[in-house]
Image 1: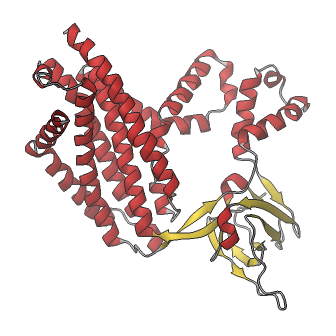
Image 2 (image 1 turned 90 degrees about the vertical axis):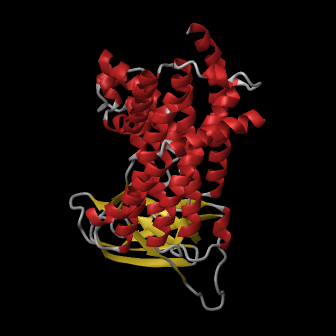
Image 3 (image 1 turned 60 degrees about the vertical axis):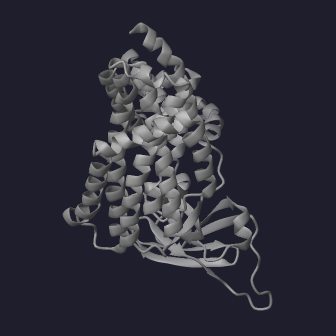
Length: 426
């Protein structure tokens, strides 16, 4: 154990002596103060907060990911090339312990720099501003909906013959993608309902609805209607297509008082406008329950960002143990870039392209890259933080346990398995 902390301290001292820690801190501070003066928001408090969160704090995160990844991919590879790893192994210490000690030092450096940026952000925004739990309508999963639609879709005479000859798995994947953007239409003077299920609804206070409507022909048509859930209600009028949040108010009923909510409740919207309205229930309708403050949400987001750095550093050290420094750095950067681009590629290029062999191979590789990098790409909490969406404590705990501890330890063990074999080859 003493050897572990010794390696950790030596790695940390190396960051200080090389002035890497100081340079990262200075650049982060300059970026946090300079960006809001160089880039103007829309003039609202929400726009300024989004600029601070997504681009100021997000820029610091990108800087740390690139810097720590470059350092991690060169750490073990450089020591192997310079024959200095043998000196470390004179003391009784396992290879995996060396990797973990170096990873911990990298994460501590990243966490320290990130903490400075978070403190600067906290001083610029209203930390007392509330955030909200986001509830989605209770709907079948896109995969379940695709399975239900498959029979009717294949029997539809308008379905192209080429699609009917396609493998079932490909058609199901196509229908699953379409299910995510499945629109519902609310005719004039009609009511549409969505079921929400959460134990917190039984004692909810201060409910709000966030929605985005569109129309069949003109997205800027007037929208009029009434939202109702239990005794909560709100009238909506004179809005255009935009993401809007509508606070609900409890309606006191004489003689009965307030009717208690249940964990399973239906949200209804009655369209009182002149035109039918369209929305995607999976994307365009949310029920918001009050949570805690922006400060608490920022703290949870900070933990998730540190977990992201831990996973990136562990991956970089694994590559450093397996490959030479230039190759490890190249593979790491390409993996990160492909991971960020894969979801957009999958969303924009439908499965009909799989009729060509080259397209089919490309999409298979893209989906594989998206699955492999999903632990990192799904951790980023900045979008939720900028929208005042609560970063749930359960999500943070699960990420710390799996992405911050289990996966880095697994990668360290794999790196420890590879290191002695690379040593023998040199």
